[in-house]
Amino acid sequence: MRAVLQLLRSPWLRTVFLLSALSLALYAVASQWAQVRAAMSGMSPWLLGGALAAALAYVVLTWLAWRSLLSDMGTSLPRGPAFRVFFVSQLGKYLPGGVWNILAAAELGADHQVPRRRSVSVMAVSVAMSTVTGLALAVGTMPFAPRQVAATYSWSLAMLPALLLLLAPPLLNRLLGTALRLAGRPPLEGAVSWTGVLACAAWSLLAWTAAGLQVFLLAVGTGMEASTSTLVLCVGGYALAWSVGFLVVLVPAGAGVREAVLALVLAGSLSSGGTVVVVLLSRVVLTVADLALGGLGLLAARTHRNHRGHGAGSP
Image (cartoon, rainbow, N blue to C red; front, top):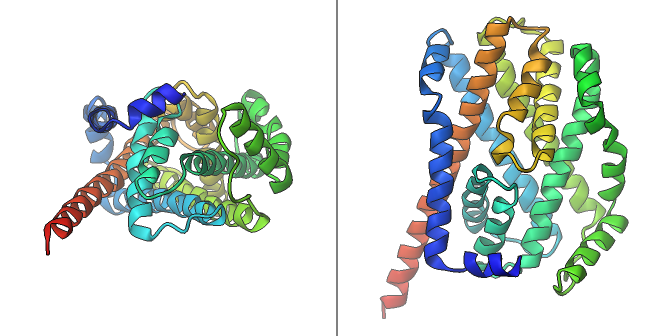
């Protein structure tokens, strides 16, 4: 791990990392463009635009969850630097391995005097919180989902009580301290508090609501009945799909796994063709949201460097 971190501190390797992540994210869209164009041809532009807006809101809300936890653990990073660190690092989700966004956040955060061990801890806890809140919403969705969903993914739902216990601050702080000690790193300067955990959980629940709304709008545009129960199904169904996709850590950004879970959840409310359209468009819309915000983060970082360079050269 130390060797990997040393490599990530190299400017040229950072460039390679970002180009690789961007290329894979763009490929995820371009490789399915023919199917995407066909799917969009019958979709209301208002519903499609609403889905993209909901996807952008979802990603921004995950940023707010991360930032609230970072502040709770001792770093009140201003919005500008926080925006650059988080959204650029999230492009690492598209690289195989499941850890590149966390390592990228640590290196980018270090540029703003955020200790790497704090960055890694915050990102790990915020991802764990997303998983826990996602599984909690999934449990509430089970009455609206096909029976096969609970039968197939009961193993993930069974993990919820243990994960909830692990996120209780007294135990969570001990686990973080033990992990840092085993990695040969100093302990954290600030502990996670109940306030930080609850704030992160609240932002995460709002994020899942936005993500589910994105799926709901696409599904309604494909023929699903618009009702409270189908909205609840989409919110909990996407949360379950993401959580299972994350647990399969070797797959870039949950690719394939997430779609399979979401398709099974929607199977009772849409035709097989409609399910394929929604699953495909949801993946593309969320990838576009990641690319848009990651691109803005890269642009903001470049602008910040240019301004800093001009300032350094001025009298």
